[in-house]
Amino acid sequence: MEKKNLDWSNIGFNYRTTDKRYVANYKDGEWGEGELTSDANIVLNECAGILQYCQECFEGLKAYTTADGSVVTFRPDLNAERMMDSAAWLEMPPFPKERFLEAVDQVVRANAAWVPPYGSGATLYLRPYMFASGPVIGVKPSLEYQFRLFGTPVGPYFKGGAKPLTLCVSDFDRAAPHGTGHVKAGLNYAMSLHASVLAHAAGYDENLFPDSATRSYVEETGGANFLFVTKDHEVVTPQSDSILPSITRRSLLYVAEHYLGLKVSQRPVKLSELADFAECGLCGTAAVISPVGKIVDHGKEICFPSGMEKMGEITQKLYDTLTGIQMGTTEAPEGWIRKIM
Image (cartoon, rainbow, N blue to C red; front, top):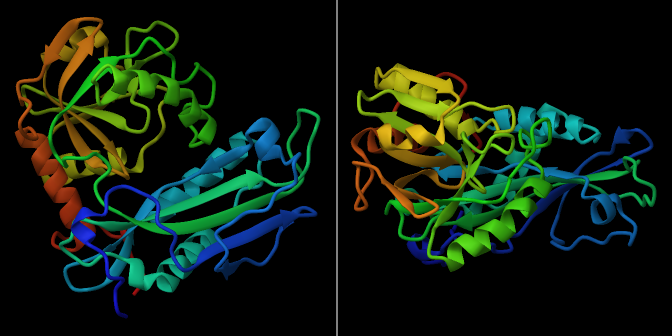
């Protein structure tokens, strides 16, 4: 398969329309047979539930070209399961796991020319999503839904690659206790946009959102989980019922413990202890890990010893090991890699 003529190393994290996407409809209590389509546009009733009451959830994963030329995805079964959990929380009919995995395979194969080559630093980002397509005027779940999945080639999520970021502690709340912070719903990200624009205007790369109840514990940024490293090389991630259960974070903790032999823990992390950590990073599908060099809490600067020039020692080892697993240069745990081509 001849690849598209793109400057793969400089494509940025932007949307590009590719050749095919997958679509399946839910009506009369069951999912219909899905299919690939060339049409990137969606036609909806003006009263569709997604437009009126934001009934929607989504996922994000990537297809990679590995060192031996294979095209694979990384732990897509966990994306399927998390999307089923999100759908159930939002009173939507879960899209079956095996059908989710088959849809991913179909879209990757149909867009093989768009899968970036090994060594380019780029990947094929896959976006499965589901929304209420049926008309609903009263506040209640829709009776009709659509599941779709498209792919688009992307470069690194944060410009400048691994350059450490500067964050600010936000005055806004990302998610309420007992709310939807633990599900991957578009409404959570909509809530972060105003805070994100203000942070960028003030010269920061991202927000640190504290917990909404006490505003004394670390939760998330607008689109990634936190990962900290202590001065004794213990890897720590914040624990909260309103944090999204990140597949990347889960994988990094496994790598830290089983590949690097480090102690790991998931626990509530107080804002007051940030200065005690040696390293800080943001982790997620899009960025894998982006190092954080400084967090500003209302004028108070918290600078991590790892500095503003490069990733910290442990963060770099975590990044190298996980990306090595994804790219086929490091042996993967059983079941982590799904080969498509």
